[in-house]
Image (cartoon, rainbow, N blue to C red; front, side, top):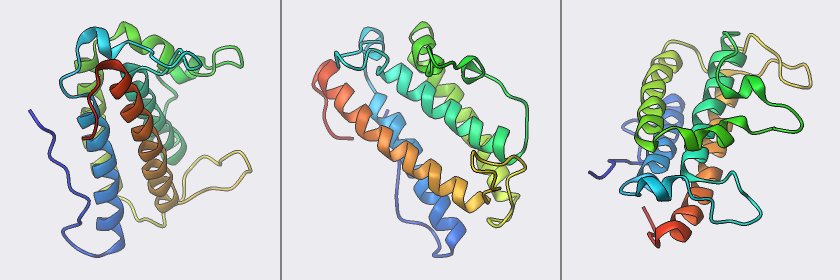
Amino acid sequence: MTTQRTDTPAAWDERTQLTTFLDYARATAVAKCEGVSAEGAVKAPLPGSPLMTLCGLISHLRWVEYYWLEEVFLDGEEAGPLVHATEEDPDPEMRTAVEVPLPQLLAEYEEQSARFRELVAGHSLDAKAKRPIRDGRHVDLRWILLHLIEEISRHNGHLDVVRELVDGRVGS
């Protein structure tokens, strides 16, 4: 199976452009994982980055998106491995991900993405987050979408490198 993706929006309004790029970045992350073996999904090929696995990166993307949309924007319940982050263990979502099969992580990420598409569709881009960010400001939904596009796209580069080192697959 090949993940279908496009970065060309169906319309040229701001919301459609933002959500198209967010979906494109999400679909690219999923495509980077297609066809990898179970062993390859948990392999950390970069000696200086022992948590950087395909499973770890997908888990990170899922929980970062949850944090920004569910916790910051909606002021929802804190959940998932990020709740347990500490200075000594800042990335528990990446460390624990190797215990979960990649197909399950991808299914959970895609299910969550569908929920968040509905959430975004139901709010103005100008709607303010209920929780402030570190500097005390309340960002708007537009900023959160732009931040998620940046975050996912940056990690897609990591997925590229890890995948090539794991089994030689390039592109996607």
